[in-house]
Image (cartoon, rainbow over all chains, first blue to last red; front, top):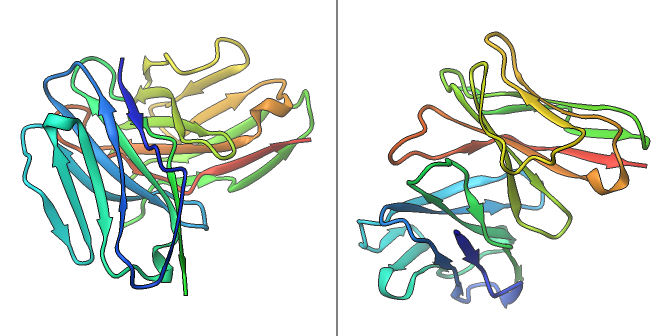
Length: 115
Length: 115
Protein backbone atom coordinates (compact mmCIF):
# COMPACT_ATOMS: atom_id res chain seq x y z
CA UNK A 1 0.00 0.00 0.00
CA UNK A 2 1.11 3.55 -0.62
CA UNK A 3 1.01 6.20 2.05
CA UNK A 4 2.04 9.83 2.47
CA UNK A 5 2.46 11.39 5.90
CA UNK A 6 2.64 15.09 6.58
CA UNK A 7 3.14 15.16 10.32
CA UNK A 8 2.85 18.93 10.64
CA UNK A 9 -0.82 19.82 10.65
CA UNK A 10 -0.30 23.55 11.06
CA UNK A 11 2.71 25.86 10.97
CA UNK A 12 2.70 29.55 11.76
CA UNK A 13 5.71 31.80 11.19
CA UNK A 14 6.45 35.47 10.85
CA UNK A 15 7.09 36.90 7.40
CA UNK A 16 10.65 36.53 6.11
CA UNK A 17 11.34 33.45 8.18
CA UNK A 18 12.36 30.24 6.43
CA UNK A 19 10.01 27.30 6.85
CA UNK A 20 10.27 23.61 5.98
CA UNK A 21 7.29 21.36 5.35
CA UNK A 22 7.96 17.69 5.94
CA UNK A 23 6.73 14.81 3.80
CA UNK A 24 7.42 11.12 4.38
CA UNK A 25 6.14 8.45 2.03
CA UNK A 26 5.79 4.68 1.81
CA UNK A 27 5.67 2.63 -1.37
CA UNK A 28 6.83 -0.75 -2.63
CA UNK A 29 7.21 0.52 -6.17
CA UNK A 30 10.76 0.94 -7.38
CA UNK A 31 9.68 3.71 -9.72
CA UNK A 32 7.37 6.40 -8.43
CA UNK A 33 6.69 10.11 -8.60
CA UNK A 34 6.36 12.67 -5.84
CA UNK A 35 4.48 15.94 -6.04
CA UNK A 36 3.75 19.07 -4.07
CA UNK A 37 0.54 21.03 -4.57
CA UNK A 38 -0.53 24.33 -3.02
CA UNK A 39 -4.13 25.07 -2.04
CA UNK A 40 -4.55 28.80 -1.33
CA UNK A 41 -7.58 30.14 0.54
CA UNK A 42 -9.46 30.42 -2.76
CA UNK A 43 -9.52 26.61 -2.83
CA UNK A 44 -7.98 25.59 -6.13
CA UNK A 45 -5.02 23.20 -6.32
CA UNK A 46 -1.84 24.55 -7.82
CA UNK A 47 0.85 22.17 -9.04
CA UNK A 48 4.30 23.08 -7.71
CA UNK A 49 6.71 20.27 -8.54
CA UNK A 50 7.10 16.67 -9.68
CA UNK A 51 10.12 14.60 -8.72
CA UNK A 52 10.93 11.17 -10.21
CA UNK A 53 12.23 8.47 -7.89
CA UNK A 54 15.34 7.93 -9.98
CA UNK A 55 16.33 11.58 -9.79
CA UNK A 56 17.54 12.55 -6.33
CA UNK A 57 18.84 15.95 -7.27
CA UNK A 58 17.46 18.69 -5.12
CA UNK A 59 15.64 21.48 -6.89
CA UNK A 60 15.40 25.19 -6.32
CA UNK A 61 12.85 27.51 -7.88
CA UNK A 62 13.11 31.04 -6.61
CA UNK A 63 12.30 31.00 -2.91
CA UNK A 64 11.15 27.37 -3.08
CA UNK A 65 13.43 24.37 -2.73
CA UNK A 66 12.83 20.66 -2.41
CA UNK A 67 14.99 18.05 -0.72
CA UNK A 68 14.40 14.48 -1.88
CA UNK A 69 16.10 11.78 0.19
CA UNK A 70 15.32 8.26 -0.94
CA UNK A 71 17.22 6.76 2.03
CA UNK A 72 14.74 8.28 4.47
CA UNK A 73 11.73 8.27 2.10
CA UNK A 74 11.32 11.99 2.52
CA UNK A 75 10.53 14.82 0.15
CA UNK A 76 10.66 18.05 2.13
CA UNK A 77 9.73 21.50 0.90
CA UNK A 78 11.42 24.69 2.10
CA UNK A 79 10.23 28.23 1.57
CA UNK A 80 12.94 30.81 2.08
CA UNK A 81 12.09 34.35 3.19
CA UNK A 82 8.41 33.51 3.49
CA UNK A 83 5.76 35.99 2.40
CA UNK A 84 2.14 36.44 3.41
CA UNK A 85 1.09 35.19 -0.05
CA UNK A 86 2.65 31.83 0.78
CA UNK A 87 -0.15 31.22 3.28
CA UNK A 88 -1.98 28.12 2.07
CA UNK A 89 -2.45 24.43 2.66
CA UNK A 90 0.34 22.42 1.07
CA UNK A 91 -0.12 18.82 0.00
CA UNK A 92 2.52 16.24 -0.73
CA UNK A 93 1.41 13.40 -3.04
CA UNK A 94 2.75 10.12 -4.42
CA UNK A 95 1.97 8.20 -7.58
CA UNK A 96 3.35 4.71 -8.12
CA UNK A 97 4.11 2.99 -11.39
CA UNK A 98 2.16 -0.20 -10.76
CA UNK A 99 -1.45 -0.30 -11.86
CA UNK A 100 -3.52 2.64 -10.78
CA UNK A 101 -2.75 6.15 -11.82
CA UNK A 102 -4.17 7.71 -8.70
CA UNK A 103 -2.38 10.26 -6.60
CA UNK A 104 -2.12 9.43 -2.91
CA UNK A 105 -2.18 12.64 -0.88
CA UNK A 106 -0.95 13.48 2.57
CA UNK A 107 -3.26 15.21 5.01
CA UNK A 108 -1.79 18.59 4.19
CA UNK A 109 0.04 21.24 6.20
CA UNK A 110 -1.70 24.55 6.79
CA UNK A 111 0.95 27.26 6.59
CA UNK A 112 0.18 30.71 7.94
CA UNK A 113 2.62 33.54 7.34
CA UNK A 114 2.01 36.46 9.68
CA UNK A 115 3.03 40.00 8.75
CA UNK B 1 -5.07 27.93 -22.86
CA UNK B 2 -8.05 26.87 -20.81
CA UNK B 3 -7.30 24.69 -17.83
CA UNK B 4 -9.60 22.14 -16.29
CA UNK B 5 -13.10 23.57 -15.95
CA UNK B 6 -15.56 22.42 -13.35
CA UNK B 7 -19.13 23.48 -12.84
CA UNK B 8 -20.92 24.38 -10.85
CA UNK B 9 -18.39 25.81 -8.41
CA UNK B 10 -20.88 25.58 -5.57
CA UNK B 11 -23.86 23.25 -5.36
CA UNK B 12 -26.44 22.99 -2.62
CA UNK B 13 -28.69 19.97 -2.48
CA UNK B 14 -31.25 18.72 0.01
CA UNK B 15 -30.92 15.21 1.36
CA UNK B 16 -32.29 12.72 -1.14
CA UNK B 17 -31.71 14.86 -4.23
CA UNK B 18 -29.26 14.13 -7.01
CA UNK B 19 -26.03 16.03 -7.60
CA UNK B 20 -24.36 16.24 -11.02
CA UNK B 21 -20.84 17.59 -11.18
CA UNK B 22 -19.27 18.38 -14.54
CA UNK B 23 -15.64 18.46 -15.57
CA UNK B 24 -14.14 19.58 -18.87
CA UNK B 25 -10.49 18.50 -19.09
CA UNK B 26 -7.68 20.48 -20.60
CA UNK B 27 -8.06 20.44 -24.39
CA UNK B 28 -6.32 17.36 -25.73
CA UNK B 29 -6.33 15.51 -22.41
CA UNK B 30 -8.11 12.17 -22.57
CA UNK B 31 -7.51 11.04 -18.98
CA UNK B 32 -9.75 12.30 -16.18
CA UNK B 33 -9.58 11.71 -12.44
CA UNK B 34 -12.02 12.59 -9.67
CA UNK B 35 -10.96 13.23 -6.08
CA UNK B 36 -12.94 14.12 -2.98
CA UNK B 37 -11.76 16.39 -0.19
CA UNK B 38 -13.69 16.18 3.06
CA UNK B 39 -13.44 19.19 5.38
CA UNK B 40 -9.96 19.56 6.89
CA UNK B 41 -8.68 16.48 5.09
CA UNK B 42 -6.48 15.65 2.15
CA UNK B 43 -7.78 14.59 -1.23
CA UNK B 44 -8.89 11.01 -1.75
CA UNK B 45 -8.97 9.34 -5.15
CA UNK B 46 -12.37 8.26 -6.39
CA UNK B 47 -12.21 7.22 -10.05
CA UNK B 48 -10.04 7.34 -13.17
CA UNK B 49 -11.62 7.44 -16.62
CA UNK B 50 -10.53 7.55 -20.21
CA UNK B 51 -12.89 8.45 -23.00
CA UNK B 52 -15.93 6.13 -22.68
CA UNK B 53 -14.14 3.83 -20.21
CA UNK B 54 -13.86 3.57 -16.46
CA UNK B 55 -10.33 2.37 -15.77
CA UNK B 56 -10.18 2.41 -11.96
CA UNK B 57 -13.10 3.06 -9.64
CA UNK B 58 -11.49 1.61 -6.53
CA UNK B 59 -12.10 4.79 -4.52
CA UNK B 60 -15.71 5.24 -5.46
CA UNK B 61 -18.42 4.31 -2.94
CA UNK B 62 -20.27 1.26 -4.22
CA UNK B 63 -23.70 2.81 -3.98
CA UNK B 64 -25.17 6.11 -5.18
CA UNK B 65 -22.01 7.27 -6.97
CA UNK B 66 -21.32 6.91 -10.67
CA UNK B 67 -19.02 8.56 -13.20
CA UNK B 68 -18.79 8.76 -16.95
CA UNK B 69 -16.60 10.37 -19.58
CA UNK B 70 -18.48 10.19 -22.87
CA UNK B 71 -16.95 10.46 -26.31
CA UNK B 72 -18.31 13.98 -26.58
CA UNK B 73 -18.80 16.37 -23.72
CA UNK B 74 -17.57 16.68 -20.17
CA UNK B 75 -17.00 14.02 -17.57
CA UNK B 76 -19.88 13.73 -15.11
CA UNK B 77 -19.77 12.63 -11.49
CA UNK B 78 -23.26 11.75 -10.35
CA UNK B 79 -24.34 11.32 -6.74
CA UNK B 80 -27.83 9.99 -6.22
CA UNK B 81 -29.89 10.46 -3.05
CA UNK B 82 -27.27 12.67 -1.42
CA UNK B 83 -26.67 12.52 2.33
CA UNK B 84 -25.01 15.01 4.67
CA UNK B 85 -21.79 12.99 4.58
CA UNK B 86 -21.45 13.72 0.85
CA UNK B 87 -20.76 17.38 1.65
CA UNK B 88 -17.23 17.93 0.39
CA UNK B 89 -15.15 19.54 -2.33
CA UNK B 90 -14.95 17.42 -5.45
CA UNK B 91 -11.94 17.97 -7.66
CA UNK B 92 -11.44 16.84 -11.20
CA UNK B 93 -8.00 16.50 -12.76
CA UNK B 94 -6.82 15.66 -16.25
CA UNK B 95 -3.63 14.54 -17.94
CA UNK B 96 -2.49 13.99 -21.53
CA UNK B 97 -1.18 10.53 -20.77
CA UNK B 98 -1.27 7.97 -17.98
CA UNK B 99 2.22 6.50 -18.13
CA UNK B 100 5.64 7.78 -17.26
CA UNK B 101 6.26 11.18 -15.76
CA UNK B 102 3.25 13.48 -16.03
CA UNK B 103 1.27 15.86 -13.87
CA UNK B 104 -2.41 15.83 -13.16
CA UNK B 105 -3.82 19.32 -13.57
CA UNK B 106 -6.67 20.12 -11.25
CA UNK B 107 -9.80 22.13 -11.75
CA UNK B 108 -11.08 24.65 -9.18
CA UNK B 109 -13.37 22.09 -7.57
CA UNK B 110 -17.10 21.89 -6.89
CA UNK B 111 -18.12 22.46 -3.32
CA UNK B 112 -21.17 20.37 -2.55
CA UNK B 113 -23.27 21.19 0.48
CA UNK B 114 -26.06 18.85 1.49
CA UNK B 115 -28.68 20.39 3.77
